[in-house]
Image 1: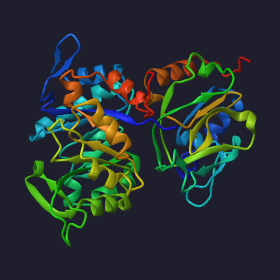
Image 2: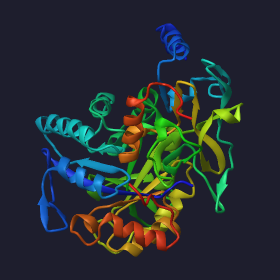
Image 3: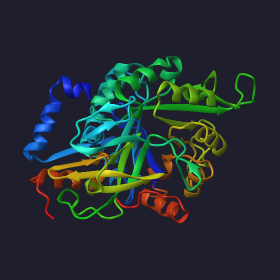
Image 4: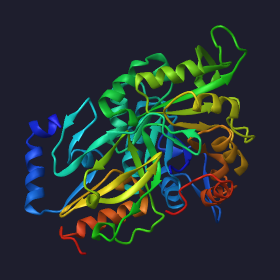
Length: 160
Length: 259
């Protein structure tokens, strides 16, 4: 966040969001759009979407086995509703994740997709001209490329 | 739910695969970029490149290979072999690798783990460990010792201690290779894998010994590995990655089954 502020990029991102330009957040680029993150105590973020970024709780389990943090590897992403950026992605598509903190939007309407890793968390959020994903579409094979292609063609309006 | 990862390993020397990789239809491929493309298309979840080049000219060739791989496949891949300095790590990461793996370089200078994690993030730093079974002793209480130079040189380090130390230093993942099992095709070293995988909090990739699909099932279930490294079993065309994944799914293991 300090880098974003010092370089003036924090302002640029805010202006782009306000102007209606299509914006895509990836991984840390998704975390910075919230109001705050639990990383390094409490870090104030850009606040484009209400909510915070939380650390996976210690002791999360799946099928009796303790889960490792970071959440690293391929996991399923259940998209909610239709969105032009997520068009054509099958329900059982998996995407590549690597993160220890997860997005927790205050407003359920901002949740665009969910993923299970001991807990159920928002793996994608969408609001107006902003789409942000916790996973890495650039490392997620064909479906990740499809998402990027969809984004590159998107005018920032919601088709619904 | 997170999928267990299936990771083909490609050995490269002077920019070429050291062993040919055979694909269906008996096509033999000696180009690491083309082999990576085939495995990417066939459902590999990640790819590991191990560079066994000795010369510095060969190193430059490897950087070129990494760049071409990054333009060709869209899944994570790591590069290891002869990484000794932060500059070595930087070269590989700037060329487009997701992760860089350090092995004997980290045994000789553990600070490279800390420095690498600080510079690029823990998720980029994989600790490669070559391990041999030995008599339990005060020095090696787990009965597994770290070796280098393909097992020729014993380092007097306990494998479990080193795995935990590397985790504390900032390694994001461990690639655990059993020198005893490596190349045998008789199965992974399950006891060693279970020991390390259940005692560290970072993911563990099991390596060495995969010859049958049952071996993958065992290491991912009984031994609790997070991922399985494979070589001959796919390189020689014994199985495709899709066949391995289908078998694992049947065995109750969650894997990425559409790509």
